[in-house]
Length: 216
Image 1 (cartoon, rainbow, N blue to C red):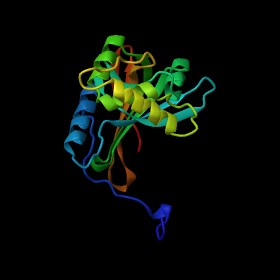
Image 2: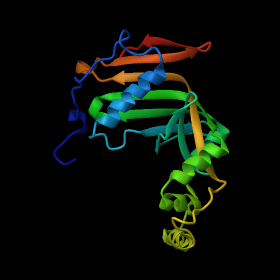
Image 3: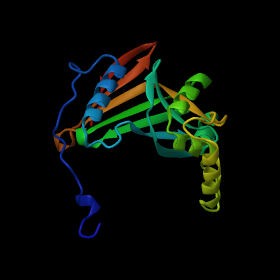
Image 4: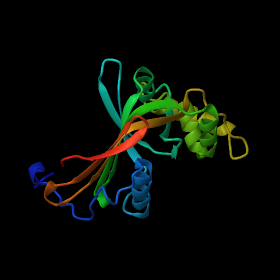
């Protein structure tokens, strides 16, 4: 940061606009359209990266980046260790939020919803599609727990790697699986000039999505 002040860091957004007349009436269609555009934008390194925000039983918030792995039956799917901090927090309070930021499109999507576990079969299907190294990592890592150093985990991984290969794959551990976040609110943000950004919020009311514009 030498030579630069945080107060001087800014960028003008002028790539696109977001209007009620052209936005989809279905927030899932609108999201998939924006996601497809982000995937096509080669500068977006991981367009399916999203910040998952949770809160524990006393309301203490936490956020971390996870990867969207599917959109199915009205929900946004990701996978994790059920005994991790996020897993424990979702078991205590399933209300959560997802945030996508596509820098090169000047776009943001915010989603508020409720998380539930996906079926064991769906979790197994995805687990079996992962690279072997990722499968083994999910087995040996006591995610979010305090450890002395990397040595023991690396030893456990190396030992497990001797037992499995492309011909013999491990079973999915019981502490691992998927979540589906079912939204009741989705907000689409398009950066505009002079900080007069476009914001459209989709709100689920009585089973129907209603669109309203928010001030920037």
